Image 1 (spheres, rainbow, N blue to C red):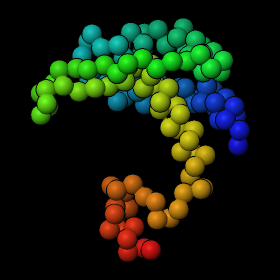
Image 2: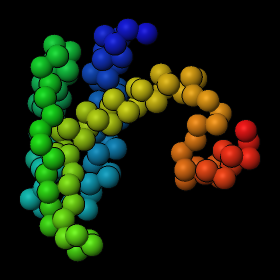
Image 3: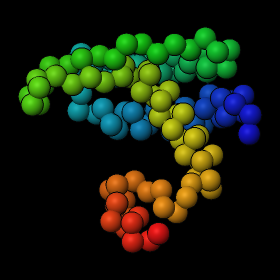
Image 4: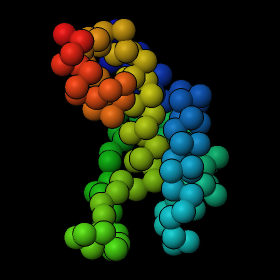
Length: 122
């Protein structure tokens, strides 16, 4: 499959909406001043711009944001909300595209028995 076909799928309204819903759910407990809230508020006007930039090849990712947290090292890096949606859209399309091509021995460590299952199934 050509990359332009995949990119068209990533930029489709359906995939961007799925990515939008995923990101909203994933960031529902983010602070009030997080960029997710502004993007949610303006999604209807921002979505066509994201589609345009994806399709014409001008989309650029922003540097990751660093938040102070109570984690071990005291900070956490995250993509800004718009980039997180684009990454999720790419993930949704590539997962469907690559699924039939994956080996049965290629599994995520936390799914279906993990590494032990992949070793015993070979």
